[in-house]
Structures are given as C-alpha cells and as structure tokens.
Amino acid sequence: MLYRRKPTVVEAVQWDGSNGHHIVDFCKSKVLWHFSQGVITVSTLHEGDINLKVGDYIVKGDKGEFYPCGKDEFESSFDEVPDNVK
Image (cartoon, rainbow, N blue to C red):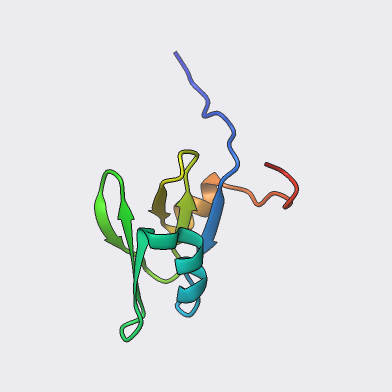
C-alpha cells in the first residue's frame, strides 16, 4: 500500500539567532531562552529538550505541541501559504 500525508497548515517561526523574544512569545512556556548564550531550547513531547541551531524552525503541531525542525527538512516539507488560509 502507498500512503500520502494529509495536507496540513502549521504555524512556524525560524530561529535566526536574534529573534529569541519572538520565539518565546510564539511558544509561550514551551521554550527556554538563555539570553546570555543566545540558546533556544524547545521542550518536546517525545524527545525531551532540544537545542535549536540557527536556521532551524519551531513548528506548532495540530495538537498545540511544539517541535524543532531543521531548515532543510522544513523547507522541503512545507510551502508558505497566505495568512488567510487555515
């Protein structure tokens, strides 16, 4: 059998090394932001705490969970959609 992933629209923010406050606002209490070191740590449901690398994305899943996604994987899996599409 072959299967196709159902299309889904997700919210995501890319970590650019300087937008920590924006990421903290996006994820609420699900991330730790170490101001002095410029490190973002995401608390995930299944993989524990994961540090982001600059260029990685934080994706908000359909159940409200947050997870990191590498730049290459994100950009090959997701296309940007207009703001009015949900």
